Length: 144
Image 1 (cartoon, helix red, strand yellow):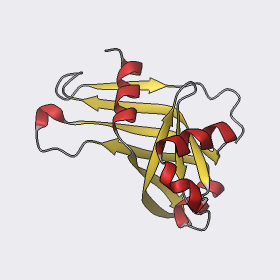
Image 2 (spheres, helix red, strand yellow):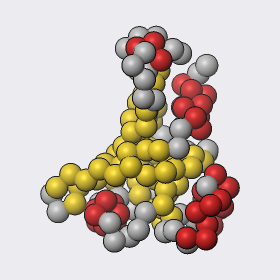
Image 3 (cartoon, helix red, strand yellow):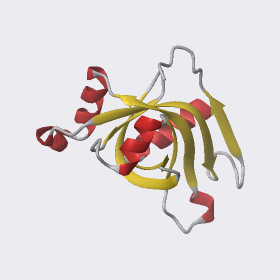
Image 4 (cartoon, one colour):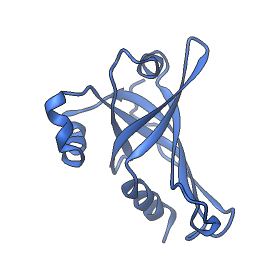
């Protein structure tokens, strides 16, 4: 499995990410449900704009985060660390999110998009113990 296929495989296997931001010089971390979208690679999340992590991402759209499999079996450890840019979601991205989480639509959540610019993949089963794959994605046409 090549690195991009593994990236897609891992992001589609999971549904919870941990978002990392800085708000007023204080680190913030928030667990968020996400839907994965391809080409360009994006994570669509729901979050109230009044939360500290959303305020932080609006002040500085450069965000980081991670997903991972919770396991005590060393051979099954897998996850992705990521960097990206936070922005409002498009109508197409909203449709992707609501197709994954249809029960959330009546709540009218505020949806955001994290456009991925860098990922670091760990997958002991597919890459081997301790091996990493780092992928970089173009930042052309990104409106900060």
